[in-house]
Length: 204
Image (cartoon, rainbow, N blue to C red; front, side, top):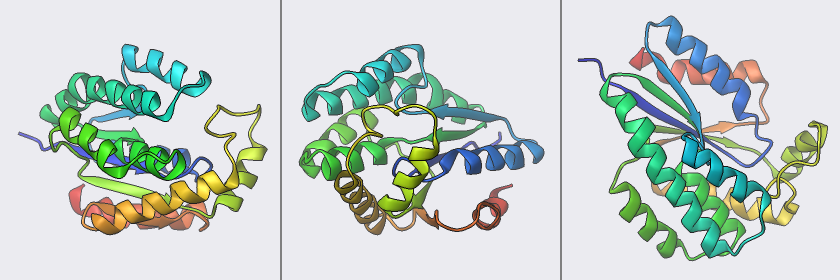
């Protein structure tokens, strides 16, 4: 039976994840694997409803955190795990590391509280590999201004907020170096694509 792979993609808003996920999806499909492309918050009908609330409605950090994990529990059980069991590759734009970084770094939640929810809802389930697109907040901010519209309420946060989120991501990666692949998101897209292709070639 084929072995599925679960890859998550992380980084502050504006880090350029989408372009690289597109390229990796094409590469994996060309190698003959089924690919399930998904995102967080979201990924299921219920998760998309929760996403709408999270991106538009003001709420306390504790409420946010609970909603993120409610959506994630549904996502893991209804989409990700079934796909892996049938041998598909799952590419998720964000997963649990995003909640840790944004809620502890950005919103000031206690790390142990977020990790307790993570342990309860996921019971040790985690991506095989997490690609962290690391980018200076000021560069990410310039990229976000190019986009049409005002962005969601997270994208409108301050530079200091994103600096704290970035540091929380780097701390998380330092504590789990076997899972994380750090990408310098200031590099040219083709350079990043070549790095990722080399990283995943051993599985293809």
